[in-house]
Length: 461
Ligand code: CO
Image (tube, rainbow, N blue to C red; front, side, top):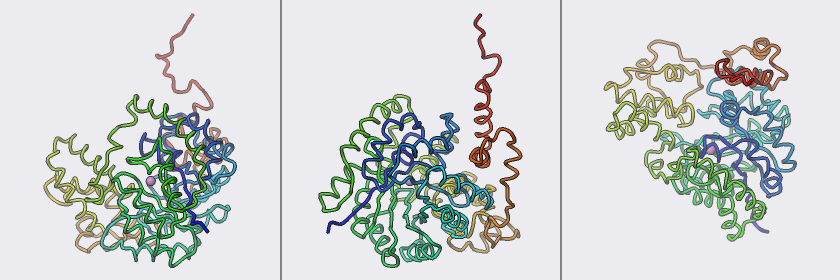
């Protein structure tokens, strides 16, 4: 019997989020949705925080409507989304009733598989999501955020996975958001997880450092069931490696992929002029295609490296770049090794920058870091020393309970605040998650001239 490996394509989510700041519109996706449906994928990733945000912010699109349109045209292939657990699609904790209502509606509007993660891998922040995904009949894919540190060993992740299995995970995803998962560790991780459970294991990485195909190869050898790739047109660089090339290579090695390459070729062709337009408009920055071995050396996401550099440039302190890079791992260790995923990557980066630029470590501490040390984001993976804690929050108390237990139900309040503007629970959720974007969007929907300033209207007689 042939060995099997299935593919999830990220073309409708992570691929364009990584390369063109999530600017692909529903209209640009529409002509190839049936082709994608018939291409033999395990699933298509179609939704996440950035797609929701960018739909409202830049495209004047209702993100719920996009999901319904995709579902209408993709009848057979499973649709997948990325959920930040108790943070839903944002960066703060929401009350349980909002999390549950969101998951109910996401599944009702077409999502089959919910990939859910917590930035700190604190499982308490996933409890409500898991319960709701199961309740509304979704496939619960629990996700480990991969990072490198003294405590984030293969054993640590295998233990975490076995806890997830106990919580009711239908599959496990290894999420390497930074592209720092090496082939050797990928092999050991997948092998280790496969030894404790029979549920499917899916692997997610980025091509940033130039080793993603090797990483997938070893993950597949170790028994991974699904890998995340992108249709070639929007593959490589900070996106995923190309579906077609990996598919062809793995088939030659004796794996059955189920992919229909003719269909994918048509999809790739469709996106070529669209990519060209994004390049001309300057939205596709050629830098995102550069190979970044530095991500392996410093073990921090490529996006974080470029953010730090541009912040230093703005302050005319580029000369401190190396020093800040050396400070990042120190800060991270002192803060109990948080994974460098949003929002913690930005928080750790800012603290490192402040430590170096101000000339005195922890002289300035952002509020987010204080909240983190107080336990408001969850339990840090490692220990924060008493000395560090006192330096950052003085004698303030550290919260030991699940952070969302502090929050009262909010859906009714959001419903009241929105009043007549809300036509559905989906509208209320849009407002709950992105109030400053949802309000103008919903007002505009009722009145097409809503945002046109009077002085800009030319009256033609
Ligand atoms: Co990703």
